[in-house]
Length: 149
Image (cartoon, rainbow, N blue to C red; front, side, top):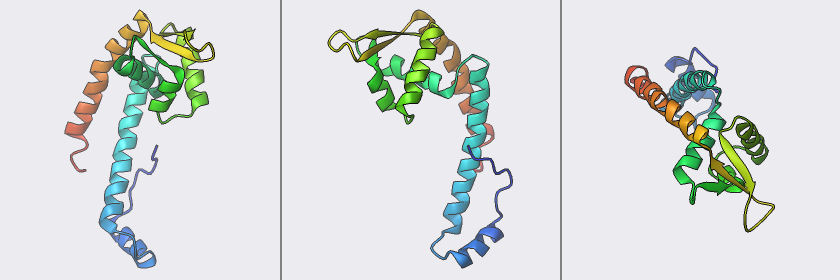
């Protein structure tokens, strides 16, 4: 998250450039705007997910399983490899999602240490419920608020 509401003015960035000549005022200004807009969008999405008892991590796990689940599922390590989240967080999130009834966790048939993860019907329904408004939030944000990017 990027929590700075009032971005530095062009003049402020020009003053920083005097101290840090390698800095590009245009690139830094554009980057700061991008960070600010992304932070606003993420907060909206997180608020939306919270209303559905999801987090961004839980949502992304549902998406990865739905999108890339070969033979109906994925190994836990494959899910962790597809997300930019630490393995312990993925492991804990998978356990909580199992408790919520969104997925199943079983030993893999060929390797008892490996965990095979599949979506339950409730997991598929949850994903089907949240995706339309998730895409709508992004769509509306890009139309109405990200024009200045």
